[in-house]
Amino acid sequence: MDVKDNLKAINEEIEAVTAHPPTVIAVTKYVTIDRAQEAYDAGLRHFGENRIEGFLEKKAALPQDATFHFIGSLQTRKVKEVINEVDYLHSLDRQSLADEIEKRAVHTIRCFVQVNVAGEDSKHGFAPEEVMSFVEGLKDFEKIEVVGLMTMAPHIEDQTQLRTYFAELKRLQQKIAALGQLNAPCTELSMGMSNDYLSAISEGSTFIRIGTKLVG
Ligand SMILES: *Cc1c(COP(=O)(O)O)cnc(C)c1O
Image 1 (cartoon, rainbow, N blue to C red):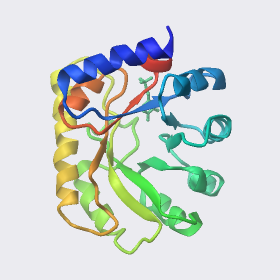
Image 2: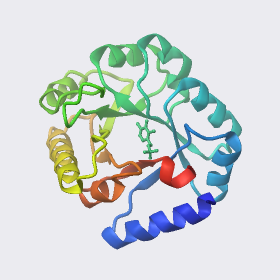
Image 3: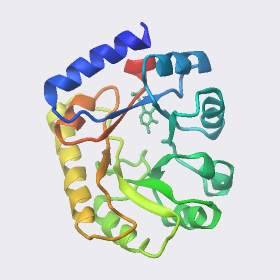
């Protein structure tokens, strides 16, 4: 399927559930540069990659006005290779990563704190009850701006259950925003993938990360 047709179908579904459409991030980790370019030509301007190699390759190939999101787990020793190329980091998931970013970044990095909403062993991220104190501990960090929270929900079909996870992330986002911490506006929610984006949007998602259903 053309990316254009996929995007049109997705946008129609989104418009049916919300008056405030989220930003669509095209997750191009499975596809070639040509396919990523097709997504750009279809009008998409936000791109997500989860590995450094693919990230740098796609960023170099696409036009300058594309925005690049690093969505994968980032090893501490690899931070220096990529952090200054990143427009948004969706996977701030531990203190040691924050410390390394503070050391290596030359400008402020817009970060999402990753939350493991369902407590799955296979997933990275803070437990919901840990997020608040982690963010408060970043108060004096000059290179980190906590723009929001991110989660990867469990791979299940039960949309009612999924919505409870997304609603929990939204409550947590509002609590952190209410701190009024200068480097943690925390206004954004990065939640929703191919199998659950409509549920995520219904619960207030502002960025959805779509791979399979958009670019294949
Ligand atoms: C791969 C990936 C996605 C996209 O997943 P799809 O199910 O293909 O839409 C979204 N977020 C993260 C963090 C990913 O690694």
